[in-house]
Length: 155
Image 1: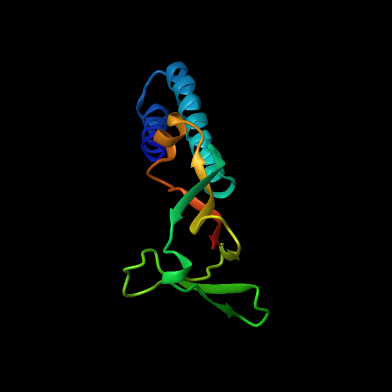
Image 2: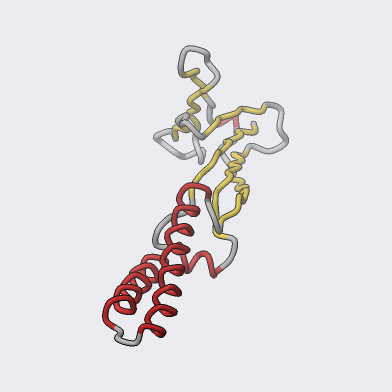
């Protein structure tokens, strides 16, 4: 929508400034469409660089994993300092091939022992649009963006 607004305002500015013979009308409408064009560009830049029209939202999901007696959780430190780790686990007891939670730049894997229930708790923080107006305005330009994510294996 913002691209359409920018295109229409630039085209209208050009038409008003160059093709309308009445100077008074063309100056007023030309200035209006020039300001609208500049505001559209500033809004796009603000959205891309500073997440204008967006807010941080944390989403928590809980998934049951196989009981410890029927599966094993393996962890392997990755990197030189060992702060990141890959975790191999089974989602179901009948699962033949294990699932691998790979470490990523914005994802952290944590294993908590002695929990009452075996589950994977995924807590992610994302940039989401504040309301439907901003979603309609910038929706085609930028998608929801992951800021950070923590996968906690409670066994």
